[in-house]
Length: 362
Image 1 (spheres, helix red, strand yellow):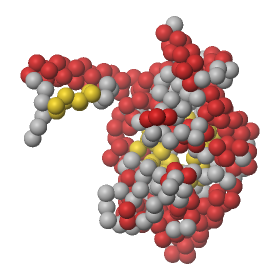
Image 2 (image 1 turned 180 degrees about the vertical axis):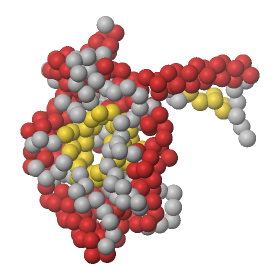
Image 3 (image 1 turned 90 degrees about the vertical axis):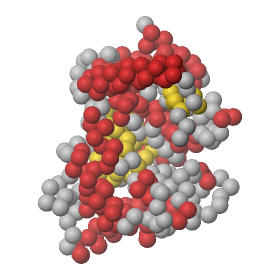
């Protein structure tokens, strides 16, 4: 029954605030809500540069309940449906029917916009007790994400079937559902995942169940090896989406949960940004689009840089959308490319952040 006050922006908490503090917090909350309403209104317009270059701005969601707020903030689709949330806080994995219901509900709410569903990404910092992932000395480098799913068809196949079926609604309406595999590090992993997807499709055909026959398939770019062989991977998928959270920790060999190496686990590190550039070059050379769904995508400070590096789509938490769209509208594509070129010549995350901050203050 204790009352507390929390400032999420500042990361501050007040236990048992007094009446004067409560009055101050309520006034600040009212101002924040007013700002959010203005931001939502501004977020409805498209993200188009001054010289007419459009970039898609999408939202990351954890379930169908997140779609409404995402659209209210101006999302043009869902760039990342984190399906692991459907598997959490329960004694057993959700059935195919349960997953299908959630995916179809999200697809209906999204409408004609894209809905990119990432297959189960567990392990590392997302353990699930009932899946018995076991104890590992280095869980981020171990049996997680696609590595786990490929050897657990009892978990993976029902999800693949549900995603394929979600591409067609109960009334036969075709939905813009797409599938994305996490933590692909080599072409053989991608081929193994696609083989299981085709097997799921074969089963649905044999059972006479409707599903999306031509569903777009993409992969997360979050393992450095995926960038090294991006030209090979791009031949076999329809899109890339960069997960900067994991990519950063793997590139910099810095656990993103370890405060002692937080300075290294920074997506503004030049090494990370150069890999983003390389992945974009490989994607466009193969004629596919590339997006980003990691935390960096929702940082408006990074927006000019990401646009200049060649990203076609940015997906983020819903409240970040209006500011990112506004940042896109303030520049031309040529300006963004010049900014990216200047940033790639810098030698530290601090220098990158400082350079981008000065641009914003000019």
